[in-house]
Length: 138
Image (cartoon, rainbow, N blue to C red; front, side, top):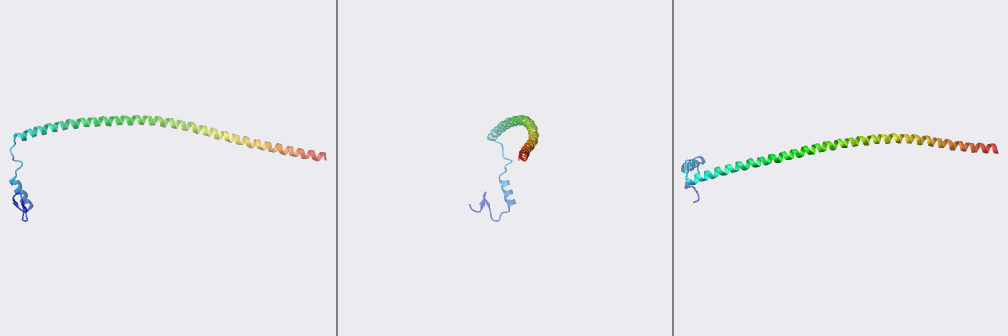
């Protein structure tokens, strides 16, 4: 058994001649069709037809899933655009409020500065008046 392939001697075989010998001994294309072959062919055809139908249905479901996904994405896009607009409006109102607070703060600081100055002048005047009164009374 060792050294023989399909009853062919294997002493330094030429691959091309070995293949040609095999093809000559086993003619696959010239085999006569039997009833089993024709029923297999019909079964194969039916299997292919069912596979095509199944593939078409699968492709249809896939397209429907893709369409639903695209619809969901568009819906999310619209929601996000609207939310973004609301946030931009809210940010604008917050900036306006911030600017008003800054302006009010500046006014209050000026008013505080004026008040401190006025208080300082009043204290100085009282001090000077007390000192003057003491000078005149002495």
